[in-house]
Image (cartoon, rainbow, N blue to C red; front, side, top):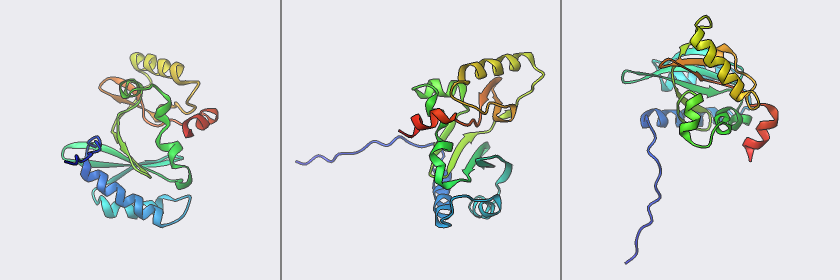
Length: 178
């Protein structure tokens, strides 16, 4: 009797949002442009997620707040389609296991070709001594790998300062690609 081989794929959190994000990927890649502006991305996102709120525009990504039940999440869309991998996977450099990675980085649930789903974080208070100490510690730990650890790229989750977005240093980008 022939046994069927079943490949185990880990269950992704928020599967409905994942399906919608894959639709966004298809529409963005159908535009066949390497660099997209918020004016081109906004109609696509708002057609798939009508209640989405744009949180901000960065150099590489545009962030939107979406809801899943009562939970607020951040959906980030990469603007430069030719270099998506570098913007989606900078956390790979830090730590080998997800436990080590989530110690410094904000939890990220999944990534598609152009989208990243993350938790939402509160802004960091620069005047709080405990938070200042955590920021200095993060900067010391990651200064050789990451070059963009400004306050706007850090967030507060459950009393801990975590990295939301950070750019990988040029010499580390080659290591991530392989």
